[in-house]
Every structure is written in structure tokens, then in C-alpha cells.
Image (tube, rainbow, N blue to C red; front, side, top):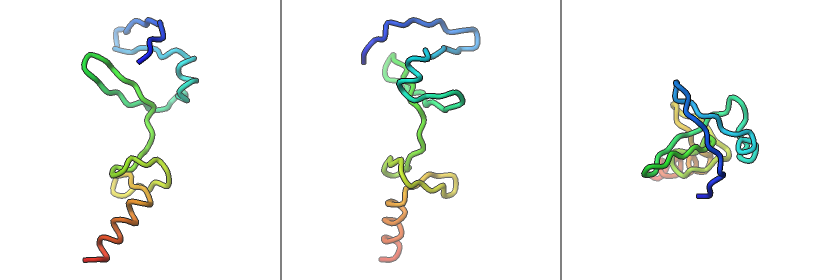
Length: 84
């Protein structure tokens, strides 16, 4: 992980401003969602992208019962059910 040399204060509501240069570089725009992870003592922010719950694919997605599934996994599940 590379340090950008930027220091920000956390405000009274726990907010931190992500510098515009970083947001631009990562394609994060106003109203985009970000995922927050921890890794040891580090906090990781990642632009949220819808992805298949089975394989992580981000293309050709379908929303099924509040779950995101890609066409490839839907096809695989369909084939598995047809072989029973």
C-alpha cells in the first residue's frame, strides 16, 4: 500500500473527506457507494460495484430475490437443475 502523504481529520460525526484527486483517479463520483473493510489496523475504502454472489463477475448481472447473479452462474445453476 502506497502512502499519498495526505492527512485528514475525522469530524465529530466520524466523516473523512476523500481528496478529489483520489476520487477522480478511482472513478468515485458524488452519490457513489463505497465499501468499507478492515485489515488489521487499516481501514480500506473501495468503490462499490454490483457483483455476482457466486463468482464475483461484474458483467451481465441479474437481481434475483435481492441477490445479484451473473448470466454465467444462472446458466450453470439451470444446467445443474436440469440434470436432476
